[in-house]
Image 1 (spheres, helix red, strand yellow):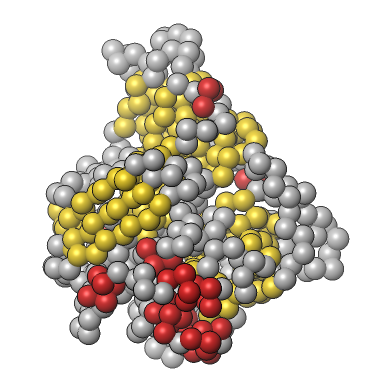
Image 2 (cartoon, protein in one colour; image 1 turned 180 degrees about the horizontal axis):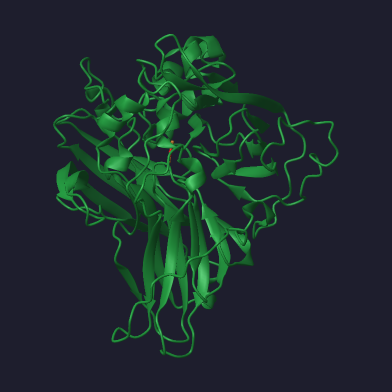
Length: 505
Ligand code: C2O
């Protein structure tokens, strides 16, 4: 194993990734797209962040990493740290003990869609599929906005938008461009690591005339399954094996197509697709993508089986039911609610409250009603039942864990009913992942083991809804956490945490 050090100077730069509009973006070391973090399982990673944004605080979250023993390196502002003030520096230091495809992004409200998001890849010397592919290619998919987020966010959460209609992107990107060619050699097999780093739009993804064989989702190896089309929500990842044809007679398009169901309005002239090309012969044409008339061939991730065939966690110790809705508050703006609570970030990061309250840390009341806190005991099976009382699709993400997806309904199925025999016919070896879609007016049931003391958010990964309060805080094994982290919080945590923190949005 190695120690990898990244020095990241975070600052505004400019970019025009869709060729339509040059705009300020948040870059690293003067570059945008920002660099990838590439590690090997077992490595220690040190990321020295200097905030040179001048007008916004920042932070980095390493999406999907368990951060076992290092919850204070997880990154969400007001949860495990304060925002890194302009001019300040902060060091993330953690060891990665899990292989797979991840990403890293700002966890300051509304910030990552301005550009501060990129791949985080963890290679695995023991990858069970190692002999089955020749090369790896990372593909990021995202939506893209011409306006910057502070402006979009203040319009979104305002009296002028009482219905909560989300801003609609101007374009889709793959690897932060609309002009991506992937050089392909005949007969070789490629592992494409696909990551949706977008703010809002899920994307349907397919390769024309090539089949994808799924081998990993969100860092979890799977039994290989073939798919013609994937539905990748914001923050989800898939690794797929694609075997190239044996001849170079033509090149092929691949497509990311934003899910228009998410858009309350569909603006004239919006092209929801981004096309890239598998280039077998660069003297030949790059074909236009063919139009398709349905998305019916999309793969259902609920049918995946984890490669380790881990059994369902069967005896639930603690069950949390979350009823989710969107509604207006007295200010006339639209917010999102779990059990009638809209998440509001606390003034003191939740972790610091845990570490400074001794035995009281097990009492959810001390964390403040608006953090929507749930205290978990250690080494329990925890179940989350989420009922979506909203006609929209939402991708939910849990920090610090992968969860088993126990149940996931079709749309309009209503709340989970533990007495309904078909709803409780659970798989013996359910898939695990860290981000899952709940369908409109449907439900999901998730389970995980509270084997990772820490402060972990569970939230909608649509950046609009994170900002409008669709989050809860899990305080997992707080007393164990106190002893684990006693004396271990580095000084820069306190140094960046000063009065006069620059508010974003
Ligand atoms: Cu991708 Cu709360 O994070």
